[in-house]
Image (cartoon, rainbow, N blue to C red):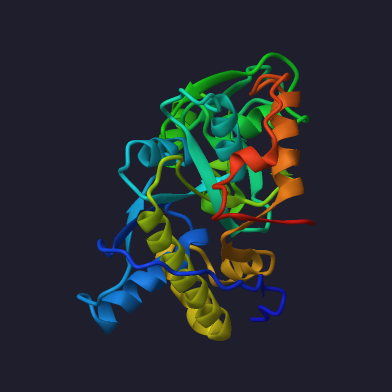
Length: 316
């Protein structure tokens, strides 16, 4: 299978600082985007489980970006791979200096856009005007994108928290929700089985995932996170060089067909560094204001969304 379309954005050198605690806790969704983290975990276990220096620890969050933001705030993880729109919305809503739930963006994990699918039950009547969207939680990507999507069915949106994809499957079967937005390849098996139907695709006009940390994270934790980010970047390079292994690994780990895996990988662009696109953050902020998710008068600049001194801007 030809994966020539896969591109890895070059990683720029980062100054590494010495840390005492070598366990660095990352969090992410149980989806194919995070396969490089799983490969690194395997490599760590094989090479030397007791090695010195920062080592990756991983925690999965089926609840999505809302759950991961809570984990960062509570210090359950040091860094999380969060949807760009969810990170930007949360930062703007908690931008005051006295806010307790402040987080910042440290860099970009996946630079290619996430392709959302609006899904409905395959048995949904064509003349139904019900418009209840299942969402993983308030402030999650599924919640935000349902509002950002300009092609939603007419009528006011209503939401029901279903916690996860499994929760959405259960709620859809019971008729409690009419629609659910999720990444198209993660839900494709439900469409292939005839359980759901794909109503339309909605590509987000900004990078899919960013690295998010607490606003008050210490310098030594930041240094450790950066070193793990470099290790993940190197793992991505290895994965792209060994294409057959990568296809099989992702297919087996995430229950995707080899053809679906190859088709997804044609368009994914892992960036995995401490840089962000200034224009993309501005675009996400403006879209969130336009649809009323954040205050339309919010004047938060892209510079206020990132970890000053540790995250660099690039211009698109």
